[in-house]
Image (cartoon, rainbow, N blue to C red; front, top):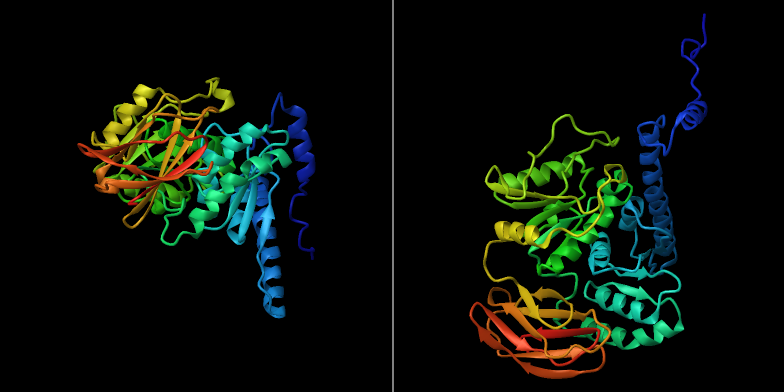
Length: 418
């Protein structure tokens, strides 16, 4: 007789890993490392499982003692594992690099939903840079941890305005954005792209905001508003479920803007045998009843040799015109310096969040809003983080309304109707 296992060939996984490492000419990919993809999946799942078990134990203890328990976590790095773990938390703190726009904060808001969220800036961030980042974060409902006491004192007025907006009954919150384009954040793509997808999502939001188009981030294709164009940025690892929802949305008449070729992967991170979408073009291709427009990737893989960078403004403008039509956009501005505009809606009420990206006060800027978003109000309320609170006149201008904004620095909010 034989004991079970004698018929099996001995297997030494560490020895195989050492051999692959010794024979590698450079960086070791998941394909070259034995069981590399399986370990990568296990590592990501282990983080979410550990956070979930700790949160469940804390809540069980709270119920047993009759106390309310708020479970929060402070992550040391962003990523797909952290995004999955955040589902078990009541609030979270994520580290972020000094942002170029609101894209990174939009992504955090999509990960956390309506739950409180804070961003931790790098150590040594200058007070002026922290102020600008906090203004952009406020438009997304994200708090910013000040890097030092000087930055904390500078952010006090900004937090006062955010607190006032949160307490005002019926005020639309930053988690209810007006959305013309919905950028999909896929935790699966983030997992298998080594963070390129996450960077591409933030870059896509910033590029669309400069277009100007109201862009929000969604964590599921089903969360995108029906009339919004779906945007895939660096989506080189969609799950089969996500790929199915994207394909069904386009074939039923939706618009899809892809930065780079979308690819679907299985649970182990291996490509599907057949692409789920045809090859796109900048001029657009028909997919069922919908339209697919494909532009170059914003954050290409290092092996491609292509430099990362913003999309060509002319090509992006043509793509948006094809997908959204030639009508009036939700918001636009005429100003001497860059101005970030973000709209939030709650029924008939609309809050317009404005962030001046210049260190000097912004003067003489004109704000244009589409009547299909705000209607035809005559007055609005203007408030800024520096303490301004006044009524401003709103003038009809064809298919939009316009208003000359008072001078302000940093973050301001225009509320309609007054």
